[in-house]
Image 1 (cartoon, rainbow, N blue to C red):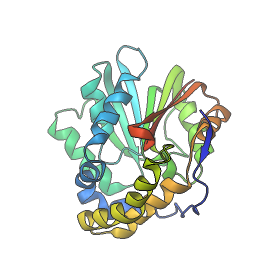
Image 2: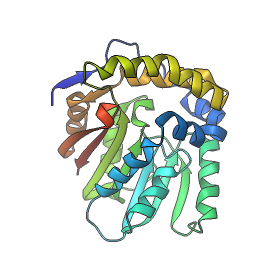
Image 3: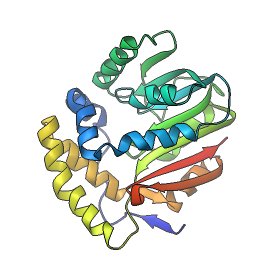
Amino acid sequence: MTVETAGAKPSPSRQNVGQMFDRIAHRYDLANRVLSMGTDIGWRKRMARDLPAREEMKLLDMATGTGDVLLAMHRMNTRVRSGVGMDVSANMLAIGRDKIEDRGLTAAFRMVRADATCIGAKDDAFDAVTISFGIRNVPDVPMALREMHRVLKPGGRLLILEFSLPGNALFRPVYLFYLRHILPRIGGILSGDQSAYRYLNQTIESFPYGDEFCALMRDAGYREVSAQPLSMGIATLYQGDK
C-alpha cells in the first residue's frame, strides 16, 4: 500500500470537540445511519470479526459516543463479556448509558467520561481496544496511541475504524463533492448544527491515513500493523497488536 495523506486541507482545532458532540448528541445516531446509508453497520461487523481470539474478553471502546460500537461488539462476538466505553461528551455518554440499561447490561458494561490521551485505567487492563471515527478528533494522536497500547494486555489488539479518502481516480472526486457539499447540509438539517459536519469533512481531508497512519501505530509500539480499506476506501480498518 502506498503512503497516502490528505494534507492539502488545514486541520481544524480539536479544542472544543466535547462541546460540539454534546450539541449533536440527540440526533447523532440518526445522522450516522442516514449519512453512511447504513454502511457503518457492515463496518462494525468487520471490526467484530477481527477481535482477538480470546475467551471472555474485556473491551475498551474509546470515543464511544452513544455506545453503538461497544454494544455491537458484544452482540456480534459472544466472547466480549464485559467492557468500558469512554468519551469526552457527557451527553453522548448519557444516551449510551440508557442503551445499556435498556438491554439489561449494566452489570457488564459501563460508560466513563475520559480523554484518549489520559485513560483512567491500569496497565494491561483490556484484551482489546476499539475506536471508531474518533482518533482524528484527538488533539495528540501519538499520545493517544501510546495510552491505548499501555492499557492493552500483552497480545491484546487495537482496532481503529476511521474515515479515509478513496484512491480510485474516478470515485474520489465524486466522494469529495459529497463530503464537502452534500454531507454538511444533510448533517446540519438532521442535527441542527451544520458547523459540526463542516468540521467532519475538514478533519477527514486533513487526517493521515493508509501507510502514514500505520507508521504512527508502529512508532507507538504496535506490531503486526495492517490497514484494510473498506467501501472503496472511504473508511479504513487499522489493526495492531501489543
